[in-house]
Length: 252
Image (cartoon, rainbow, N blue to C red; front, side, top):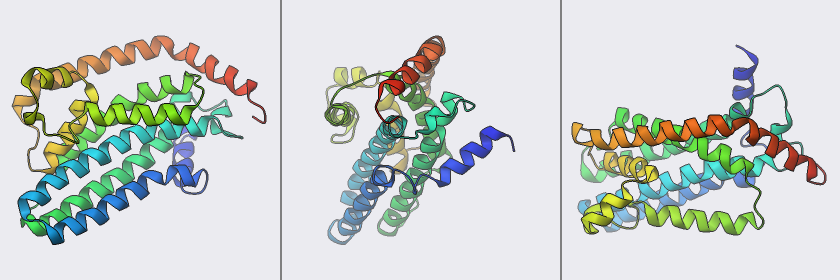
């Protein structure tokens, strides 16, 4: 096992020991969602539970994508940050948080589906489709995380709240795609986060990937290729910006 994999393995298990009040916040949100799902199973019929599951998976996916970026940003700017370790590439240093948060998200989505299956009398989720959209979500969030690390923002907490609200509004969490005008639906579908979250939600209610989604796949991968081409060009400047900012912070 080379030093990069040792680093990833070691810091994966450190996620619950350092910076725990932040790193475990998504876990708390997923648990609250689980409690509400149990209440819904007791009070709602099967159709209503299915609708609730759709919303719950969408909200969990938004928290998952958002947390991977924000938690890496928080980790970068506390004392003795692992980002100061020069022999580990910057892209590698964000992976422990990404892998840890993805593991928790996958665990809870499968648990949500298992509980809903007790009411629906059917296992709805497609595991391979779930893994497919999770992989796309990780590929999508890495460039945004790297860019967010290099941005210097005052009052970062307020900015995070605004960004999360925009994310929730711009993806089909509080509404069903078919309930909005088709023109607006086509516009929102240009958002790669919409594609990933809607794919996870649809899969949770027994609508797995099919050939009809191929045009959306092509659009998504075109956006991903563009993002990575831009990030590769920006990468060296990004590292300099982060280290320069770290040096200016007292106690770092």
